[in-house]
Image (cartoon, rainbow, N blue to C red):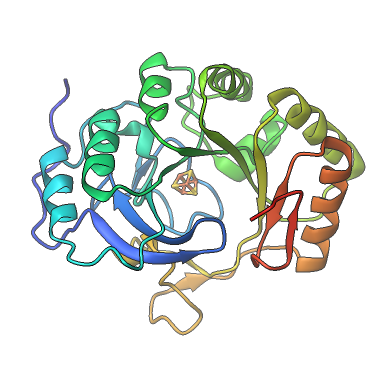
Length: 278
Ligand code: SF4
């Protein structure tokens, strides 16, 4: 097992929030990554800003015992609907993911959600760990290698066919609720929509979530940015991102639902929940 990335920072708590999420209600965040933002992607819209450690090697970032301790320090669970593993980067990079999911389940008794960028789903150990989660939301922003490079900027060893094969394999093995999350930065041309729909028909997720950047992106790493705390009025240096209007997002969601009959959600929560009953 690799060494811990850095000594624990006394300012750092692995637990944050709860954060209001249009997707998952009031969600307590668990940060498996720590002070240095770390991911196998460097998405142009990432709310963490430019990723500080761009890697695909798994390691232990935050010891499981620390997460256990931080969770036990919480005195009220009243406002927590779910617990989400995400935070300061890609949670499947954490070698102790399975251990942490087990600890979170024991302590919180709440549904567990993991948000992943899908890049490590080809790894059987990662898939096994993710099976412990009640909901897994996998990112799929790109349907061409060009788009992957442009939007997600992966580390050099990652390419689209491997990502798609990993998602497909995970879908076959996972009994929980699988969501595909797609960030829409500009209106889609008909051929992109057609290819996306074909992919989704093949993967057969339980739900599709379409989103568009709604908050400014910090340019310099701020621990605050792992929740939804950065707004136009924040004092951080930020960049406004390209996005599409709710009308464009809704129209896209309708088109996808009409063909696939897979429930589609897009923000705000009340705007559209095609095919969902809750
Ligand atoms: S996958 Fe998530 S954490 Fe990684 S760069 Fe993209 S948005 Fe940021």
